[in-house]
Length: 135
Image 1 (tube, rainbow, N blue to C red):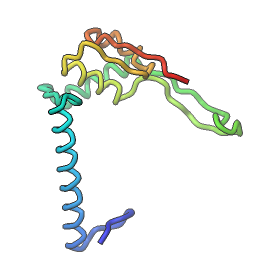
Image 2 (cartoon, helix red, strand yellow):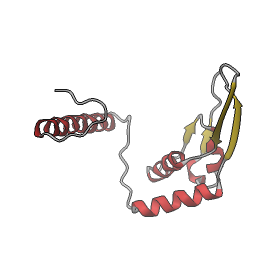
Image 3 (cartoon, rainbow, N blue to C red):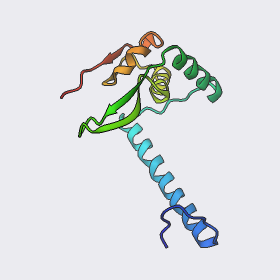
Image 4 (cartoon, helix red, strand yellow):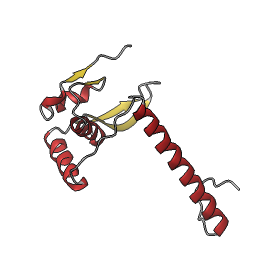
């Protein structure tokens, strides 16, 4: 039996199958990250700060460095009328990555994302280098 789509899982067999799938994927994930750490491709970082404290730090940084919201009126691909809002700037994940890098005691943070320009002042110890993307 394969579980697909959005549906209620009411029967015992489906619940057991879902539990086994989740357990298997979790085991594979843990195996991958521990093997990557063993060969130096990944560093697992212990953070002694509470999640709420980190989220408050993120919120403060984002509040002080909120990007730009722009309205788009043309599709970038076909140039037809198109109305959408886009955000340019740092976001929750950018700040999280910088916080983790700081806890990992990284002395350089090399990235292509220009949004990190706003984080240079917030994380001076990271020595953030923004590379130009190749077009």
